[in-house]
Image 1 (spheres, one colour):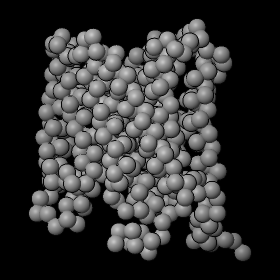
Image 2 (cartoon, rainbow, N blue to C red; image 1 turned 30 degrees about the horizontal axis):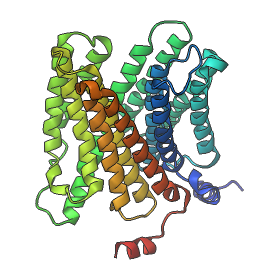
Image 3 (cartoon, rainbow, N blue to C red; image 1 turned 60 degrees about the vertical axis):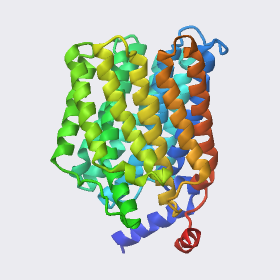
Image 4 (spheres, rainbow, N blue to C red; image 1 turned 135 degrees about the vertical axis):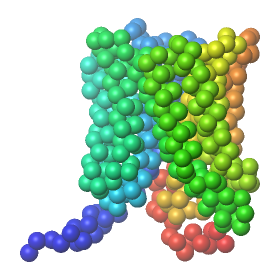
Length: 410
């Protein structure tokens, strides 16, 4: 007699629960990996930048830094978030067990491959590195199509373009065509769109839930036509930025997009949630996106705003803050813990904010430029290092039972 569908699903769930806790849900290994890699990669870059680490001939330290912050750190965070969210979107079972282990192994292989590229060669590094994001895109496509979830198809499109950027980097490293700069630029600004899309869902939603629970009469504006206009303006800017980054029209598009997303952020009533760090850090992450767009626009119209300040407002500020904000909240929520920031977690948020502020401000400080860069790197390293230590038990221990969670909240 053939096994019934519900029996097969129950057996899959049972096997997943029997395996290592860290492989039961995608956020566990990937958020842990993102935190650890953020902690290790920045000191490596700083030490190589200072000449303390002597890199092999042919190893491009700046490209490594850009690549690993995007495709290593952010790539792991994206995988953890999207693969955890997909079951809620589709009603399908989460990726877990051996399939999740294989995907994590691909991510690790990519980090090793790009770090050892001077020894193993560009072809081997490309095979090791490109397999992770390519497989991730295919897995997302399979889940969305199987779940008939066309509403979230734009997320797949964005992940696919993000992956394409990595391919473009490897095309140049392999000596085929000079596309590394375009690849980094493409993936950076695709990630900006992803922050706007995902942030536009979770920030007002979580804000509304918190304000309702608090009995507040102030609530975020619902998603509407204005949000669509703001997203459209951002997409138009990103297309121009990727294809024509040096013309003034692109700078004006950045200013327009920044203004629209600034208004969008104000519509979410962020001033009403300042009492809870888990909430204000989400608004702060989105605020960095607004600041970055305005600085990018200004840097193209005046010499008074350095390009590096604008791009680090987006990367260290927007990506660094939004990623840690989402990882902390999602990790607590999906493990049955209370959605309240501990003092130590709040310190993480403060350290990442210091890192972003000092890195953005560094180009303006003349003789103190290098000092500010080092302060930024140290704050970033301690921030994500503290996150990794604090949340290691969250990632590796079983979900807190509801009764225990209620006792904690009481």
